[in-house]
Amino acid sequence: MEWSVQQIARIAGTTSRTLRHYDDVGLLKPSRTGDNGYRFYNQASLVRLQRILLLRDLGLGLPAIAEVLGHEPDAVKALGRHLDWLRQEQDRLARQVASVRQTIEALKEGEQIMAEKMFDGFDHTQYKDEVEERWGKDAYAQGDSWWRGMGPAEKDAWKQRSRQLGSDWIAAAESGAAADSAEAQELARRQVEWLTGIPGTPASATGREGDLKGYVTGLGEMYVADPRFAANYGGEAGAAFVRDALRIYVAKNL
Amino acid sequence: MEWSVQQIARIAGTTSRTLRHYDDVGLLKPSRTGDNGYRFYNQASLVRLQRILLLRDLGLGLPAIAEVLGHEPDAVKALGRHLDWLRQEQDRLARQVASVRQTIEALKEGEQIMAEKMFDGFDHTQYKDEVEERWGKDAYAQGDSWWRGMGPAEKDAWKQRSRQLGSDWIAAAESGAAADSAEAQELARRQVEWLTGIPGTPASATGREGDLKGYVTGLGEMYVADPRFAANYGGEAGAAFVRDALRIYVAKNL
DNA sequence: GCTAGAGCTTGACGCTACGTCAAGGTCAAG
DNA sequence: CTTGACCTTGACGTAGCGTCAAGCTCTAGC
Image (cartoon, rainbow over all chains, first blue to last red; front, side, top):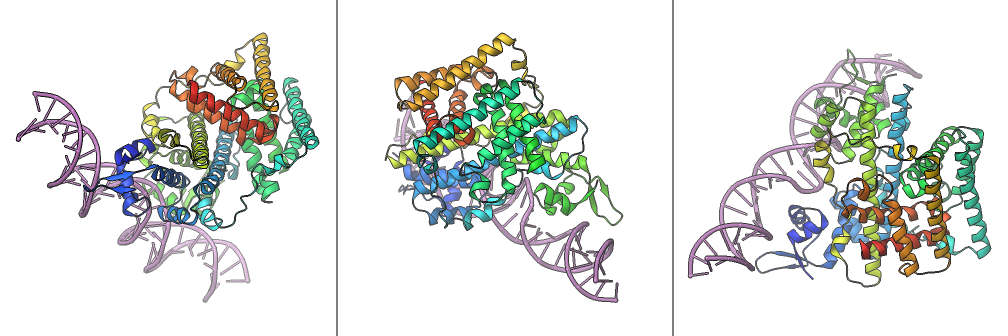
């Protein structure tokens, strides 16, 4: 299978000019060039292009992208790495949502605004250094080995604990308790404690405690954004209850 | 409360140069200018700056941002609008994750790659027209009035239905069924049917059926990304089961 | 065989949103 | 009265393309 520039451009949602630019700077050479000078691309080109656009979306410059592509010829491993970055982006977006929501509430009630919290999740520059720096270090071994490594009894205990937490939340939400009530705050504490037991959370994995705040806040936002989750907790109102309780807990205790 | 350029820059995660640029082009004037020419900003500046950076992140150019800021002086309403766009971005990211995961699997198993599906969620240009175009039309009334408008009996029925769906998924996952089995596919069908009953989903709200595909796929990815959800379904394996079943269903039936 | 139209090519210049010096005033601390 | 951090206004540089311009190529229809 082989495609022309325009076809590739349409498929990938970019322009032919961009592709010619990538050819010029040596980032993505055509797989074949016709006698007439026409550029043709194959499947390998598509995979490489996907990686390029991904890294560009993450804010990397073209030279940086070239270096990353050069350092990791194993496409599968590299794409796995990219997935991690995308998850980080999801995190950042969730925190951004939380920031905006907070601004809205503050404006509505005429409150004083906490300047720093307004911009959580807005700084998009973290990767630029980080990506090239951390490339070599393959602390990228964890995966889901955590869950698979547990025995049946441990698995049961874990599920039991998570379900208990879930039904306690529901009960609290339906009882009409306030998000800042002692009951809700105790639930939030348990939830955070529970979360830190999962590998991959900022506190347990990297040890950077500050990140836990944004992480928990972001998760709260996801609960509301995901209708599947929201429904489990009695509609948006229930999920909003969880989110608010978590946010208050984070503000007070972390 | 008043801040200098550097302070604002640090808080917002940008640079002083950027702020001076925004001053030059008239996008964000300082709230006060000292006799020495120093720029000073207040809380209103912060709110406006948050909106600017938000819109910039969404890919708008500075003139477009200026126009949007000019057309909606009510900051609260406007920020609500921005939240919608952020949710769209979360959607796009989730679909991007799905695309990359699909590429990885295809590469692993040496399969043929479906070119179009590789780039779902990559085109980031939709807003640029859309944002300015749709600004006036305030189809922005829905909110969560949907849930609040239901009677108690309806609410109970709804919750019952969603919980039933949840426990059926768990049972299927624990029984070791395959994601493409008839059992799992029937669950996926019910899940989609259930989803389309929620206002805000692409099919029910906009009527554009094509969007439902990406929406469902994206939701599946969120289930895996969110450890809270994953735990409810027996760890990553359970959530992955749900995700895979949904993805297969979408590919075959939508 | 001729022509129209869509698609391809290589330049080359333009543009946006800043980064990055340069050259110099301002201000609190010691 | 100096040091160092912070501020100012220019002014030029740069990345990643967009956007013509001028011309070659291929397919389709008459």
